[in-house]
Image (cartoon, rainbow, N blue to C red; front, side, top):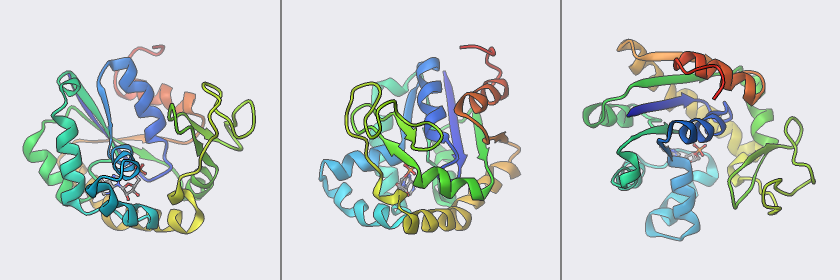
Length: 214
Ligand code: AMP
């Protein structure tokens, strides 16, 4: 049983690392961004309400995010632990989590701001298997198509430059206090998130005390 939280700005590479690590540790990968996008795609009432915030790069109101996460935490696959990716993003979310769930590891991904805009605007996703590409640093073998299943790659609407700028500003204003929250409690550990996914993975493994090779 291990309960891990990944914090860090959009584009820091949390999702990429979370997917691989959750699979390796056999814990549930809980991305509130993915849960919200699924609700938007499914046109649920919650998704419809969240859509406008996501498009603009703003945070979805706490009550909606907490609701969607609670429902997901009720799923039995979280009983062996989980990796939270993209939650908490506000102090209110952090305080709530603190009251209900004990955490084992809180890792903050650190990356210079100038790398973020590049990473986010160059990002493309497979809508089927969710593999993440970067058109410059990690392109697919056939331009525009997923290596695994051939699906046409998509760009998130909030990876367009205006929304990216908003998301980074929102991170400074609303999520940085969350880092301080964990730091004040002696819980925060920082990860140098520069470099390739493999390099970051090696640092992450060392930080979590996992053997060097999976
Ligand atoms: P992500 O995929 O983690 O970058 O999240 C995409 C978008 O979903 C964010 O820009 C927010 O609009 C929304 N979102 C995801 N997680 C949260 C959260 N914990 N609190 C509020 N909004 C969130």
